[in-house]
Image (cartoon, rainbow, N blue to C red; front, side):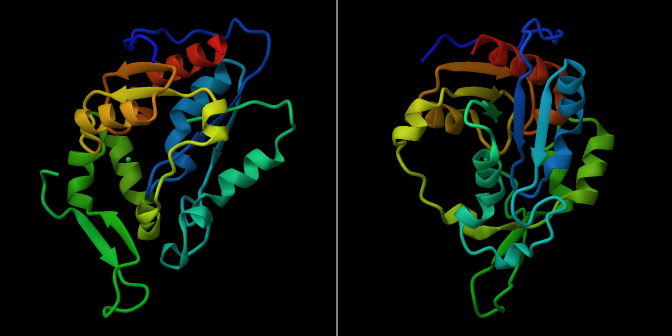
Length: 223
């Protein structure tokens, strides 16, 4: 694993004459909409950006209670990469507060819950404590329940494809969803080629979009 790098990387126009294609993938309950600041900055630097919605997320109309597997949830991303030209490179990018989720029971109350959403009163405390208030308000209007089946997916230990694709990890230093020790455990289990740190909450696309965009450009131009 490479030496850890801080977030002091300026956002500059790309010096590379080749346009990069950034594929930005949201986390649970969000959608492609959450990347609007980063997309604006990257496109302003001359790059192509795709902000897709996973199944039952963003404006994708599926019912989260009907999503049957992680593979189904992830299908839009798989389809996107399958549609890219062979030579085309995409750059892709989870409490101490007690019970913070509202659950939905799509199969009835006599069955386990099928989807969940962080309660509105906890969203700023957990997801956006460093983000502008207007972004937190926007998110509260757009967040959707996420299918709980995706939390049951057993992640494999790599494989040929995961070893072939270079990966970097950006640590959010003020993350209240993935604590520092959890992030370190993830880094240790799946060592990336480089680790960066950013002074951010769980949502750097809101709380520190300039530095996040600068890091993405730096990585893209170094690969």
